[in-house]
Length: 425
Image 1 (tube, rainbow, N blue to C red):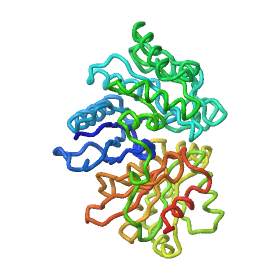
Image 2: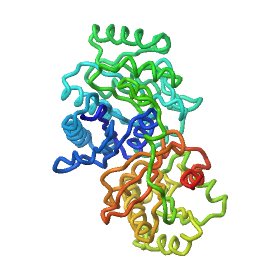
Image 3: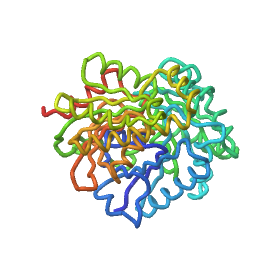
Image 4: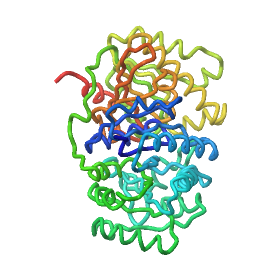
């Protein structure tokens, strides 16, 4: 049997976030790192769903479209009955894309004239009301995302945000319709389609809303959303939540954290970890730019403390500090220097026996899994909403447990809670 659901995620932590919700709802899930070469369908195993993790959120539009269409072709080859385009729960994008152009390209390839769009994920404080995206109790435009270095989000009206990126009309399925049930949502979708609307932003202020939406879109070839909609889809194939879907091998080895996110949530998590007095090493982009071997210094520090771990290696800073560095060496160069250094650090940590590794930040996670040569992940138990532990196999055949955390996700004590979850009962 082919897979039921094939998903395309625009970054690595977003892919894991989506896979986590599918597992919680009863699906066995494999996450692949980019599109497998030479077929690679043997990686699917007994999975109900496959999530392909791309690094396409902030690349040029043409590159994002090309990567997404390659992923779509692979998933269709694996027998996917429905396709899910997953983006961030804060709708990270620019007026040029990439959410809108990628969604349109997928629609064209699938021969469909309509899809839905909702980044809602109430478990993580992301809700959509009257087409406006809220982060906790504030509008997206008033949240920390307004200061994002690559995709600053200054408009909360998703109909307008998506409309600026697409050539097709965008409409709204509001909360009163969603609250009325799946049949009401289907009727509204039919109405919008008759008016020539191609995209519908869908309100969702609770998990119940997402479950109703999931039932309503069971026959759409393509859905686009954050990870929240995933909780409403497995039931369409008769699947129910089961702990067996999240089973992973027994963990072992040293523990470490690599954090490259500059988000507000990750800043809190770094501060909470530092307050515990555990070993931590700060990566300074200016020292990297000056030619210092910062990765070597970080690894020497880690090696001296791994037996007392977990050890934290971090470049996380407050927005004003990040802007100061960007003014001195440039935003793109600063990001690339840190990403490359943290990937080198992660590779060195694994070489020193780390087999339980938390990585914070979408771009950082992508760089780390690529540096480690990991091609696929089996999704396990949830640490915090949107972030599970995963099991992978390194190129030398040895196992490793990874938690790839979106910068925006997790409570202040996330780093400590993550390792507690892996401890024997």
